[in-house]
Image 1 (tube, rainbow over the protein chains, first blue to last red):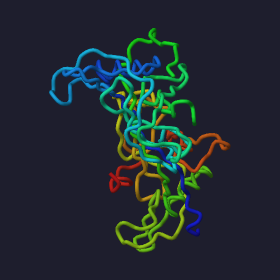
Image 2: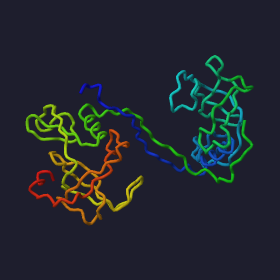
Image 3: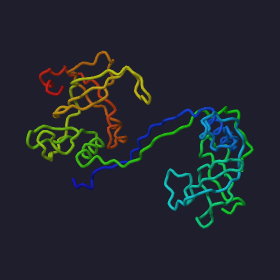
Image 4: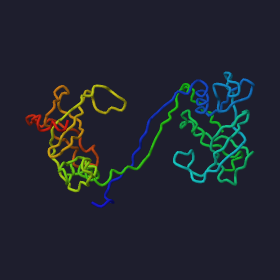
Length: 152
Length: 170
């Protein structure tokens, strides 16, 4: 039998982990499912997004949840010309740090601007959620951010 | 823009699915491909070592003792002898067989190495070393180059094998 007659097959090895998210990230994810963006007040009054249980500068407990966005500013970005299967979009997009209105920290997510020439640091973007029926309480409930004004 | 529809009736999000996944292409190689193609035809195919004469099933393509390629294909019998076994009483995630069930090493007639198989059609407390069993295959149109083609082994009614015939294979 020639080598070419050797069989081959596609296999998937998968561990279906789930993790508990805790009260703060849980509230953030619940907000995403409801189509809201939430941050948390740090001990010096700054707003942290995505929220943390502890203030990263002081170690103190964080405070109340506050609504942020839905718009924000692109602080930094990198263009992805060839999206991979696990990426949030199937068409070329940017990974970007977006500082949402009302927040003092930036959130990493995809920006669907259409092309790298359509995006610049400092640009205003706004959130595009998945339809409510598809949202499950996960980062992917945000489909992407898009240029404010709907350029994409 | 935020969708005004809320899902508050679902309660707060408390867990997040974080599967770890590896997709890969598997090739069993030429020797095991012959074994798997044999399963697709409803038979067990092994290979004989030209030096020691032992028959391996499934063959890895070489003799682990002599280090030479195993080139002679050998069709094995559909019947064999239970050499050792384990009765599974413990449930576990993803279990598809009703407990208790028997997992046995079966020495197919004509082979020199035993082969792991599920034993059915017998109460778990009646399994014994030396029991003669036969393979039960899926329907002919369901055969694939996979061990899923073998549904299980079951007692075939022959008298138990003499211990001397399988003591080498324990």
